Length: 289
Ligand code: PD2
Ligand code: ZN
Image (cartoon, rainbow, N blue to C red; front, side):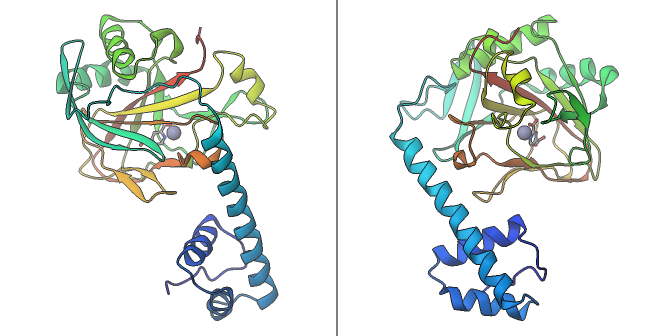
């Protein structure tokens, strides 16, 4: 049995450990005994077990409900015939990996090396410390969970941007007007983006303002504009997937509901050496003006 966190707080890591042990058939008394050996009081360990497993039951119930619901149209590449190469507006894009839950596709050569370099050079003079949406107000704020620099292009603002947006719209079969402007992020060594979901939580008071402009986010495309020497993977902790950043590659993932059951929790692992540049495209339910 793997080691457990030696603390009395129920961290996400501890929750995942409890769920994985339970799924592997470990009896509850063995989990409690392991936690007690790591310094937990027995009553607190029992409570942590109960809370974590109840929360997991709610996730499973929501997943079952979601599976029974007819989904609306979603951004989605045409992989019906299992292609390893897609010709998109005359540009060859490799399909390197496709999985269903989370819905995730890894593309190769989505952008050429020259397109990546040109995007970086157009973004560089406009970079500012990245901000995230303040869930209370809907405004944006500097956040220690995101230590990159970033900027947004306006849709169609240059011939380069317009061409890339057209290619993404064709690839994902989603109109340009239903996409946010491309965001470029720059991570230096040590910079990271801690795990989060990209959809807006409808329960948060600040979400109304962002949802009023184009509706919910349905999908994300993270395009790698550089290959850092080490680190900087885009990680999906719910499913244990680390996508290595490779210049020109892109990871696409979609979420048909604003819920963790989509398994789209993801983050940018710290860059260990070199620099990481990405361009992110978010696709919305409605027109984003
Ligand atoms: O740069 C990344 O790998 C990354 C990770 C998580 C980007 C985003 N999220 C994002 O732009 O939302
Ligand atoms: Zn993200």
